Structures are given as C-alpha cells and as structure tokens.
Image (cartoon, rainbow, N blue to C red):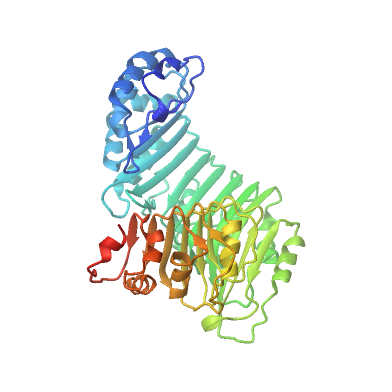
Amino acid sequence: MNMNTLNNNDVNILDPFYVRHLDLTVLSLLNDNSPVNNQIFDRIRTKILPQIHNRVTKLPIEPLSMKCILNAIDYLVLTSLSLVNFQSETLFHHLTGDNILLRLFTNQITHLEVSICDKKRGAPGRNEVDIFSLMLSIGKCLTDLAFGLRWIDERIEFSFFDLPSTTCVSSSLTKLVITLHTFDDCLHLLDGRLKHLSMLIIDIMKIRRTSPNIDNNKNLPELKCFSLRSHWYTCFYDNRIVPLLPRMLNLEELTLFLSVITNESTYIDGTQLYNDFLIYMPQLSKFYFSMHTNIFNNDIDIDHPSNNDILKSFIKRGYQQVNSYADDQLTYKNWSCCHVYSLPYHFNDFLFMTSRFQGGMFNKVRCLVMDYARPFENELFKIISQDFPFLESLPVVNRASQKNKEHSSTFITFSHLLRLDLAVVHTDYAVKFLFGKNTSLPRLMHLDIKFETLVTVTEGFTNDAARRTYTQIESLVIWEPFVCPENFFSYFS
C-alpha cells in the first residue's frame, strides 16, 4: 500500500487482512523523501497500524518518521526494511541508540535496503564503514542487503579502506548489492568474511591496479550469481578481472558490463571469454554481457577480425543470442573499437556507440552515450529514435563534421528524452537536435552545451525558430566562463 496516493477518504479502505507492504514515504519536489500529510499520517499511525501490526512484512521508512513509525506498534512479522535517504551520522545514531531498531535487526530483519544521502560532498568516511560493519554484526537473520551511498545529486562509492578481515563479517548474508570504490574492495568482500555469500552484485566506477597483498587465489564455491559493472574504461582487465572469475567454479549466473583498453591486436570475443573463464564454469546457465574493447596500437598493419568473425566465435561456443559492431581497421590516432553484447540487451545504459552501430531493439536502455572520431550521420539518429524508444539521457561526443548535412525528410522524435549533452560536439549536431525542422524533443528539460555552439545555433540569441526547443528547458549547463548577452535570459523565457 503506497501512501503517495492516499487521501482522507481513502484511509477507510485499508483492509488489515490484505495489507502486507506499507510505504509511508513520498517524493517531494526536491526528489527527496518527506512525510505524508500530517493529518493522514496521524490517522494511519493511530487507527490503521494497530490493526495490521501482525501482518506488515515490508516497511520503507525515512529519518523524520522513523521513530514515530517504529514506536507506534510491534511489527511481529516484519522481515523487510528499507531505510531511505538517511544521513550517515543520523543512521549511525539510530543503529547504536534505538532499542526497537536493534531488536528488529537482531531477531527479525532478513532483507535490508539502505540509502545513505549526505548533503556534504566528500569521500565515504568511517561512519559509512562502521554502519556497514554494524549492520552485518547485529543482523543475525540478515540474508539480503542492498547498501547505497550518494550525495544529493549523485552517487558515491563505498570503500573498506584496507580493513582487516575480522571486520564486516557475516555468517548469514547470502546476497549483497553494493557500489564500491575500487576493485580491491571487491576482492576484500570475497576474502572469506562473508562465508555464505551466494549472490554478489557490484558497481565499480573505475577498475585500477590492485594491491599485491590481497589473496586472489582461493576458490569461491558458494558463489552462484556474480554481477560486475563499471562505466569507465580499464586497462586491467587481463591482470585483475580475468584471474578472479575462474575462482567461481559453481557460478550459475554471470553479468559483465565492462569497457577495456588494450594494446593487443584483437578484440575480446567468444573464444577469449571461453578460454579465460567460461571453461571453468560448468554450471553457468545465464550470461549477460556488454563488452567494449578499445585497441590502441601503433602497428598500422594489424589485421582486425571482421564483425562476422566475432559473432561466429560466440556461436561456436553455444552463444547464439549475441550482436556486435566493430572497426575493421585502426581509425583516429591508431585506435579501433568493438562492442559485443548479449541479446536481449540486459542493461539500462548503452555506452560508447560508434557509427558502426547497425540497430536492434533496446527497450530497457535509458541512457545512451555516443562517442566516436568518425561523424554520426542523420540515418544513425533515425535508427536510435526507433530502436531506443524509452531513451531519457543522450550524451554525444563527436568533433567531426557530418558529411551529409542535408536534413532527412523523415520526422524524428525522441519522445522520452529529458537530458541532452552536446558539450563536446561539432556544431552540426547541435543544429540537428536543436534547430532541425524534422527533429522533435518534446520532453527535453536539461541541456549541456558550449557557449560558442549555443551562440552559433541561435544566431546570437535572435533566431526565433530555434526557441521552440529552448523555452521548455529547465536546466542549461555551460561549463566554460562567458559573459551573458543582453538578450540571453529573455531568449529562454
């Protein structure tokens, strides 16, 4: 039962025989959680909660309502708890001083989701590490933990800071979802401190060189599901990631979302994946992946495998549902790239698209990053508008002028696009999106762009035809310093 849509007349329809999940948080205008209307909230606390105290199994709560909600009744069958948008100091105080919360953690809670939202920027500190360790320590029944940190407007990563293996220990935890700071932190989690962990889902912003003091050799027979996602290129795929995966002898489900830089002469393909780790996973039944390979090599005579060869390397190993696109030769400054991915596409993000992309269907994708040295032509944007129907964010990186500047007669609509980043593009692409007669961005709210490009496209903020796109924008980001022309603000009003 979600309190977001509850009004005074609705309180009476809460049937205590059917309520299992009670959500007492709503989104405020600042995208933060706040208590529901006080009058309704009091009626729920005094009239409804006493009737359903022995039926609520799942409960999301926030800082302002936490004490009131937990003190209202005894939640006899509560097993799932979500702690939403807590500052780290506040949450630590509750964990060490709230007897009701401690009792729930010790005796009942099996599933826990934690969202720490700090207002001050900075690296995660002792509080976050202590909170994580304390939850594992007092959560005697805890089997499923999702642990997330963020500032008000962006995510941050959690780090163990080289803590000994005697901390952050649990003998009950079987599933962990967490965003980590380094690959070392991933190895720490797998050093034996979580004895019965069978599902590990991690995000790592950057995968760098790891410490030589971490044991990366013991097998991990308990692990059944492993997901590793990183949104930045790494040079340490062969030295760090590949040695970890063969240790997962009983893995049944594997998810990899990686971008790799190498100076080798070939792309990552089905044969390499099989020889590196798939051969050691006889129980593997599900393999979801998105793998980029960027080759940097001064040998201009490199003979790259064709796209067809790459697909055949997967088919040979029994992976039929795969697609790819690749450069067949070195391109700008001796770079070449390949993207291979499982189908249907499993991820919300599609990174580093090049003009080699041929299409497909990507209903799950919400963010697409286009980045290439060769130009993006109009036909590609037409394909994207059709094949990424729910796209919300589109950063474009391309300084190359379009070869075909003629606007297509086909009308293109990005019906769900909210954010467009044109900060590192040739002016052609700004014209295409913001001034093209056959391009529609009906929901665009956020635009990143260079001031020089903006001046060019708007003809010094005098072109009324371009205003149809700009008047709906709520957030305009211009990174370089500039002096506002007299008509700057009126142009966007």
